[in-house]
Length: 420
Ligand SMILES: Cc1cc2nc3c(=O)[nH]c(=O)nc-3n(C[C@H](O)[C@H](O)[C@H](O)COP(=O)(O)OP(=O)(O)OC[C@H]3O[C@@H](n4cnc5c(N)ncnc54)[C@H](O)[C@@H]3O)c2cc1C
Image (cartoon, rainbow, N blue to C red; front, side):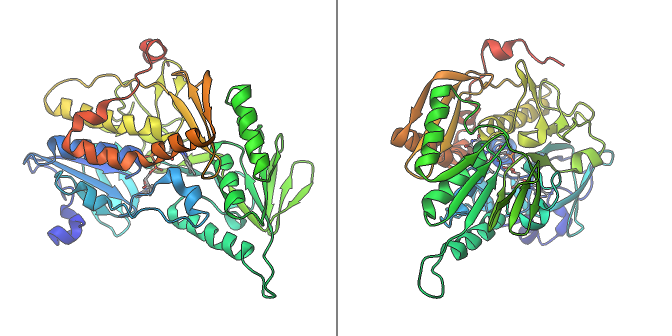
């Protein structure tokens, strides 16, 4: 149940104004990182009379972004209700689209003109595919930016692949732009679910380029087995109705284009005057607080978090620990203690290749590949376990918050601390 329907008063969810003796913690975004922060905080301090924890998100249903390529091929995912998960934690849920953050007044505006006050903000609005860099993407390409967007693509693919009026099976060409992991997973899934469609994967790099040669070769061979035509070292310069244009002028026919290349973050942090990097991600100190506004914590894809090996890139494996760490830090500051530095090291890159195959590349803390990797059904089971893990993890954290505070700290790769 949303805070609005519970209280019947719109602005009460996170406190309409300050000075009520309550410390208001407002969490923006219920992705993997924001959910981790909300459950941790709710479980640890949500029932205290002097603390109010409020989570704001565009949808009540949790979006399993790791599985949006499955949604895009018509596979039904579980209905995961955020307000239901938070029940019993003391954290409240407000459904709404955040339209502005006023870092001076410490308020957040929601699209229905509610204004929520905060004493501490956790900024976790995630990232989406960048549609602005190449002309025509916004107008003509599909994305996996949300469950709704993925469902629209599923509908298009069903219609393309479906039986024609004369009873024969449909056909068409689906172009997936971006040879990163999202592009690879999507191309493989579409080829497996719709064997009648031609799937073309276009990108600058060879798929699997970040893996060891052996793991990368397995990934490319699996794409080949599924019938995905891979073209690397190409630059898409425009998306047109019915085609994509490459640098040099060549056009590749496309009945549907899925855009997975590049990400961008919400402009709200920069507009609020928070210090951000060149991509608009919030710059943080070692404890994940905004460099310019220490009462704001930034987590997940929306944050530029520097570790000994460089700035973390957006993943679920790193995003969930940032949310937990922000929550633990807030609890420490409520007790008058200093927050501890955040440390995280990568450990794997699991990539699905349809439902029965995958590659899991194990990595060093700096995300460089180790020699060891898994392939085939074992890897597919591993990947499925990883994708399914966040929701039960939140459930466990509700009962045992400390269970969520376990992740690889990165050893010597992060011991050097923050380098700027
Ligand atoms: C198809 C696909 C496969 C992937 N596979 C993997 C993988 O195997 N492993 C891995 O580690 N990572 C993977 N990723 C990346 C991973 O999903 C992201 O790194 C992760 O979702 C980031 O979590 P987050 O909490 O920062 O943001 P998000 O998960 O993006 O959540 C942000 C939340 O904020 C909400 N929001 C945004 N703006 C507003 C607003 N203005 N008002 C209200 N709410 C708003 C969104 O609706 C969303 O609920 C994959 C991504 C995709 C698309």
